[in-house]
Length: 251
Image (cartoon, helix red, strand yellow):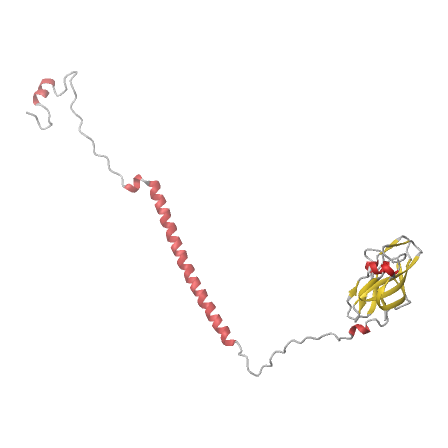
């Protein structure tokens, strides 16, 4: 039989309330059960991340709402301004003068006939670079040039320009017959016929003629032109690459 302290009375009487020497101690009563923590307390990092995501979502929604409101207001303002501008535009009246049609002005057909006035002509010397040119005679409407087996027949008609070329510079100059162009009244240009020049004058044809300082050569430039076309001028060019051409009238 136990007393109210849960101890055997015989045990107390025998040992004076103390456990026997070397005997077991009475059992220790269990302590209070540990308090269980919540899910958020046990997952602090994840909870913080969720809170941050929620904050970002709220801010984004708020900013989008404000932007939509601003865009709508701006659109309404632009529409109102456009309507106001349309209302102030003046409608064209039927009394306005129509635009004039573009016109084309053509040069006179005979304009080229007056271009030679006041320019050097036959017998007048002109200078291009270090070469001086003087036309001494012009022969037109030649059906052929040369004799016997050297004769050359024109496709149209030959025009013969007799010229004297003098080197007035200090160095030797090379005359290129291909640089000397003849022109008609429409300013079309024609190159010399080197083969016809050789047939006409084999010894003095001005083809790649080398002229020393102070010397002069005489020759004939031959041009094959249509029978209905008349030569009106010739452009002479010196032996230099950048020499400007000089014009002589052949009227």
